[in-house]
Length: 518
Image (cartoon, rainbow, N blue to C red; front, side, top):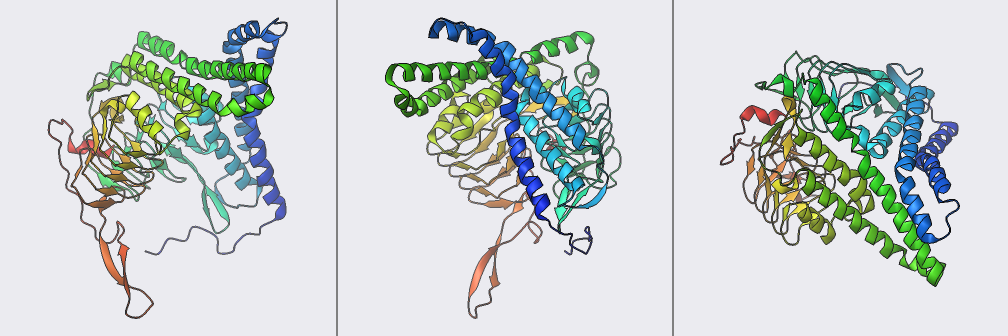
């Protein structure tokens, strides 16, 4: 249909001056991680100074790793806080020219926020996350749980007890016709915004409401309502209650216990710094013995060895911390959930930067996933490492899991972590940025299109094709082309009268229909 007019009719002017400003800003932002390393390097240099031989220098450097890690993390956090706060001055709701001050501020703010999720990953999905978001200028209530949220802090309000899952977006800017639009967004009290969910400017997640995975918040939603899809559709959902002392109102002893576990999330960061020190020492040792040229030639092998060590450490941490995942439930305030987050930190800040993030689509990725417990068949193409609970994933021979996909084996609404198995049959394909929810089965040789959502408990039959959010039948229809006498097949989109998929309850599953909304 015809889109509503959201932008001024007249296109704003473009200037070389603002093009240069954007270019220089991009360069400066890319240098921030390197600048933040300087305090850590100074600490390492202070410890190494005066060492009489290479062995002593290495020992002193490894001793300095904890202090150097903290120095660099604090420096980067300070850069982000000062930058986001300064860029938030003067931001106001409305449409602004892309080549102008306010648009540049909004753009640079989102870049800083996105970088922080990577370089300060241990701060997210923890008790410290609300404190961190408040420091950035966001209005955050009491008892909020937030993961890797991306937002314009000065335009965002989060109510008491709300839950923001992984990769959520709140009040992001919109672009069109040379204009940039920003507006406030609100997450209501005890509201839930699911993985990769979005609350655009001018929209809100209502009080006690739910916006599901890969979905967008509607306008004017009533309290307690649940929404799924893009565009969102209203769905029934029975809110489940559990022991409040394990969900919303934990006793003080559980808060201290969780804080103690989350403090350990600095350990994988220290491991990656220590590994970098060891690899550099090995490079120097090769250079001293055989010359700089030999060290350069051996650089790739040294980095690969470091990557293998990083993956091995992350794998051992997973098995020691959580063991084998099973299809069970755990409340938020339980040691299993905290230990699971700690194990995930080992993957995200140690294994992924060193190796796992660079081997998508190769046999090494399949080997890595198998080491975590996933059952991966022969000839599988996996361009993603996002298998949160790998033991609950089965991927058949010759299947394809494309970039940006999430094989989501848990849901976390109502502050209860529910896990279930996900199965991809032989030769199945999950398109780029697709998400499969727990309890789902994709049949052999079945294709799910890009940016599509397979809901909880769905079973897709063999040799079929599906597309959309949520998925529907992906038909082909014959349409005319300009050349006379010729026709071609065109894939029909979700809005062309596609047949809705029947919800199928997996054998042995306790999943309820309403659980699919999250």
